[in-house]
Image (cartoon, rainbow, N blue to C red; front, side, top):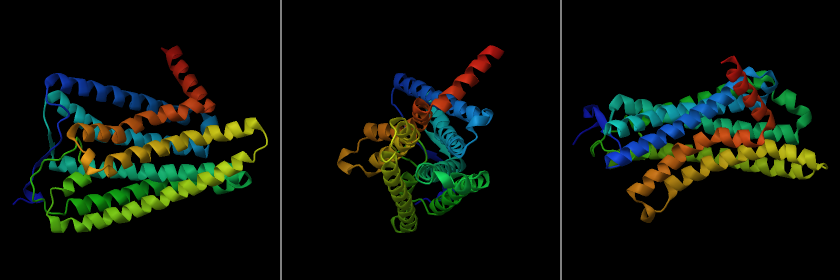
Length: 310
């Protein structure tokens, strides 16, 4: 019997068995991470440098891009390193840090997506009160609350998980440190505390989800009452990217964690884990930039300005 104090490292799930597939997975992860870094980096730079984008919607989008970048940089580099050097190890402290940062960025991201929904709701359903309800100070407070909530959420889960005695080895069936996989290593009678915390977290996430659903019902009702087709198109163009990001974020995570055990297999589990943990964060910049003309114009101006300087 071993406990967490005697474990110096964990063994992560190998992405592939053969050297050719390991190199292929490294190249795929490199391409996805570079796309995420480029897309989110362009959004951050465009919003920061373009004064006409200094609005609540783009301010929260900048925070979302920072969260996406943080999550990608937490999970993907270690997986790329392990694939390239044919290793599976991650240190105990490295695993603790990874769990903390994953929950920090994921918790903050969901809070930001909820706040962005509120921003769209006020913009479309209560436009006369928009500047009052979403002034610069209110936006700063809401963003700070989102990051603080992510920090507290992560701190509780991380401290609770790694205080449990680990009695079943150190091999994790995931390519990054994930709490459900770590719980499988703990003593059966010690897991109930963390499972209760996960249940409470799931309830809070469900409340946020229901708030998003209720807000979009009100938004669509208000949009359909807009007399001009151009007005409806403009309203939809600001809402649909956010709705697509929320749907992608929730659907991939739900499928990955709530699929029937009969569908479980190492290759399918690995594909689903990449699908929910990496792909949405790389696609978010593309989803937001496709339908937002202001953002596309700002990004294009930024890129052409950089090319002209060189």
